[in-house]
Image (cartoon, rainbow, N blue to C red; front, side, top):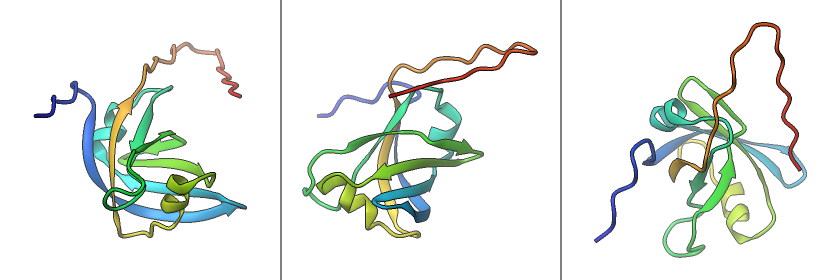
Length: 120
Protein backbone atom coordinates (compact mmCIF):
# COMPACT_ATOMS: atom_id res chain seq x y z
CA UNK A 1 0.00 0.00 0.00
CA UNK A 2 1.37 3.43 -0.91
CA UNK A 3 1.33 6.40 1.44
CA UNK A 4 -0.72 9.41 0.36
CA UNK A 5 1.16 12.44 -0.91
CA UNK A 6 1.29 15.40 1.48
CA UNK A 7 -1.22 18.17 0.79
CA UNK A 8 -0.25 20.61 -1.98
CA UNK A 9 1.68 17.89 -3.85
CA UNK A 10 -0.19 16.56 -6.84
CA UNK A 11 0.22 13.46 -8.98
CA UNK A 12 -1.21 14.24 -12.41
CA UNK A 13 -1.23 13.07 -15.99
CA UNK A 14 -0.72 16.42 -17.67
CA UNK A 15 -1.27 17.14 -21.35
CA UNK A 16 1.81 18.38 -23.19
CA UNK A 17 0.85 21.69 -24.82
CA UNK A 18 4.11 22.38 -26.61
CA UNK A 19 7.56 20.92 -26.94
CA UNK A 20 10.09 22.86 -28.94
CA UNK A 21 13.81 22.77 -29.51
CA UNK A 22 15.44 26.01 -28.31
CA UNK A 23 19.10 25.10 -28.77
CA UNK A 24 21.48 22.18 -29.29
CA UNK A 25 20.17 19.44 -26.99
CA UNK A 26 17.89 21.93 -25.21
CA UNK A 27 14.09 21.72 -25.19
CA UNK A 28 11.27 23.85 -23.79
CA UNK A 29 8.33 21.78 -22.55
CA UNK A 30 4.94 23.14 -21.49
CA UNK A 31 2.29 21.12 -19.66
CA UNK A 32 -1.19 22.05 -18.44
CA UNK A 33 -1.74 21.44 -14.74
CA UNK A 34 -3.82 23.94 -12.84
CA UNK A 35 -3.14 22.09 -9.58
CA UNK A 36 0.65 22.34 -9.84
CA UNK A 37 0.56 25.85 -11.33
CA UNK A 38 -1.52 27.18 -8.43
CA UNK A 39 0.49 25.44 -5.68
CA UNK A 40 4.07 26.09 -6.85
CA UNK A 41 6.37 28.56 -5.07
CA UNK A 42 9.79 29.85 -6.13
CA UNK A 43 12.54 27.28 -5.53
CA UNK A 44 10.37 24.20 -6.05
CA UNK A 45 10.57 21.49 -8.71
CA UNK A 46 8.43 18.83 -10.36
CA UNK A 47 9.27 15.17 -11.04
CA UNK A 48 8.55 14.15 -14.64
CA UNK A 49 8.25 10.51 -15.70
CA UNK A 50 10.35 10.30 -18.88
CA UNK A 51 8.96 7.20 -20.57
CA UNK A 52 6.26 4.61 -20.73
CA UNK A 53 6.56 1.48 -18.65
CA UNK A 54 9.70 0.64 -16.68
CA UNK A 55 12.48 2.12 -18.78
CA UNK A 56 13.73 4.51 -17.57
CA UNK A 57 12.53 3.50 -14.14
CA UNK A 58 12.76 6.69 -12.07
CA UNK A 59 11.12 10.08 -12.56
CA UNK A 60 13.48 13.00 -13.19
CA UNK A 61 13.37 16.24 -11.14
CA UNK A 62 13.13 19.51 -13.11
CA UNK A 63 13.14 23.09 -11.93
CA UNK A 64 10.21 25.12 -13.13
CA UNK A 65 11.16 27.62 -15.81
CA UNK A 66 7.93 29.59 -15.88
CA UNK A 67 4.28 29.41 -14.81
CA UNK A 68 1.60 31.32 -16.70
CA UNK A 69 -2.00 30.70 -15.62
CA UNK A 70 -2.32 26.88 -15.66
CA UNK A 71 0.73 26.21 -17.89
CA UNK A 72 3.94 24.99 -16.25
CA UNK A 73 7.11 25.23 -18.35
CA UNK A 74 10.45 23.45 -18.09
CA UNK A 75 13.80 23.70 -19.87
CA UNK A 76 15.27 20.27 -20.49
CA UNK A 77 18.86 19.58 -21.53
CA UNK A 78 19.50 16.13 -22.98
CA UNK A 79 22.25 14.50 -20.91
CA UNK A 80 21.15 10.87 -20.56
CA UNK A 81 18.51 8.24 -21.16
CA UNK A 82 15.71 9.95 -19.21
CA UNK A 83 16.15 13.40 -20.71
CA UNK A 84 16.53 11.85 -24.18
CA UNK A 85 13.14 10.16 -23.68
CA UNK A 86 11.63 13.51 -22.65
CA UNK A 87 13.11 15.14 -25.77
CA UNK A 88 11.04 12.77 -27.91
CA UNK A 89 7.67 13.54 -26.32
CA UNK A 90 5.18 15.32 -28.59
CA UNK A 91 2.48 17.93 -28.05
CA UNK A 92 -0.84 16.23 -27.40
CA UNK A 93 0.66 13.37 -25.38
CA UNK A 94 0.20 13.11 -21.62
CA UNK A 95 3.09 13.24 -19.19
CA UNK A 96 2.98 11.75 -15.69
CA UNK A 97 4.32 14.21 -13.15
CA UNK A 98 4.11 15.04 -9.50
CA UNK A 99 4.86 18.12 -7.53
CA UNK A 100 5.52 20.75 -6.56
CA UNK A 101 8.33 19.34 -4.45
CA UNK A 102 11.13 20.93 -2.47
CA UNK A 103 11.25 23.76 -0.01
CA UNK A 104 9.94 26.87 -1.69
CA UNK A 105 9.98 30.41 -0.41
CA UNK A 106 7.87 33.52 -0.69
CA UNK A 107 9.13 36.61 -2.48
CA UNK A 108 8.89 39.65 -0.20
CA UNK A 109 6.58 42.24 -1.72
CA UNK A 110 7.78 45.81 -1.26
CA UNK A 111 7.52 48.85 -3.46
CA UNK A 112 10.78 49.96 -5.02
CA UNK A 113 12.71 46.77 -4.22
CA UNK A 114 14.02 44.57 -7.03
CA UNK A 115 15.04 40.95 -6.59
CA UNK A 116 17.81 39.10 -8.36
CA UNK A 117 18.45 35.37 -8.15
CA UNK A 118 21.71 33.82 -9.32
CA UNK A 119 22.16 30.07 -9.53
CA UNK A 120 25.03 27.89 -10.61
